[in-house]
Image (cartoon, rainbow, N blue to C red; front, side, top):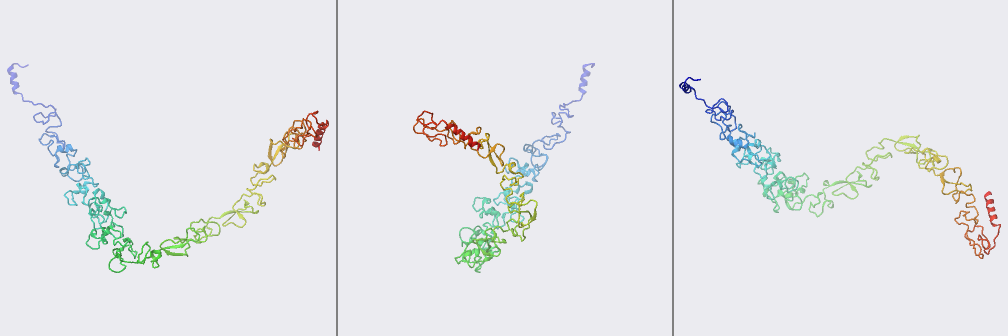
Length: 562
């Protein structure tokens, strides 16, 4: 193509020099600080927080601080922080400040810069801020005991026990009793939350009356130095604010309140200027408390000088129904026998009459509400025959029952006292028990048992019977026939020597002595045997009368026809 080598050489010398652009981003490798990444070049925007010099201006990388929060890009990248923001966790504390302290104050696995509650006390860091309430050099957002009262902030947060507008977690005297919270650790284990001297469920540091003696702890300071901890009137080793008997006189402080206003501070019975609860020699007025208040050796009801204003009202309960007679009251500390506190019985002679009793239609005020028979009326029925069953056609609404009326309405004949639902059904053609059935139609009828007389001899078969008011055809009342197929066999027949029990007495024929010398053996007195031999065979040595059998048979027929 070229005419000579000289011309080609001249052309090459005159051509410009070209540099490579490997990532094809329009910037050659000379000006491109990373020619393998098309997103990195002098014309690319700088991306905050990625620790890369995106625009090739020489500023960036892991050591640089893109957002200017005092934490390098590399540290923020490694910690998962926001490289383009100065407060990664939004708690109001700059990343640089949180980064300069312990990385994870509460040890919850989340570094402070990403933890909205750095000290894990239940209060967000932005709410606590960088204030240092207790002056211990640790700002509240990093301090798990903001007021340094030995009770963790998370255990105090959310309350203001003494109402002083300082929340407990910032208040060094949570209950306002003048004893610091940290000093209300009576058992000395460093934890005031488990000290509850009076057992009322409120730990001392939250209890304005630690011994529950009705005197606020702040007032149990007789020496007036503002510190109840050094006041021990009875010298028993228990300061007054933890002692339920401050003067050790055997009377609990709470009961040394003769005027009954609930405040032992203003009771000074002997006028010596020392309130009774601090004065072991003070004797007061006897009141209902189980103690000898006036030092006379008598207690409560046994003391005639008892202040009855402190006693209870008791009413006599003569009928024992738990409700007393309002007119029979006495005052006493303890319940006297036969008396109750309730005095609302309107009839103390009747245990069925009292405020808890149901109202009845009986002309009485059963429930003591001042009204008689105020319940809806009852329907009553006239009982003309006096059998306690009423005529259903005679209903009358009334309260109480009119004379001669009953509550029942099931009598079917109110003119006959023998006829009513509880009567026995008789065979008399009448419906005695009011079930609309009479005699044989009523399965409850008191009927007769009849027996089949198949052979017509007026004696029935005991194995074949029916129950009915009247005998059905062929039935009779006698059940004594032992062979109801033979009219010659029945209890009235004569026993003959024929191998059968003719008279149904359970004995067949009998046996005449066949030896011919003793006569009848007497097995059946009714049998036709007589003289020696009886029913024995002829020629056995006895006398045989040939006409005896025919005569006996004839006698049986005659009796049957009679």
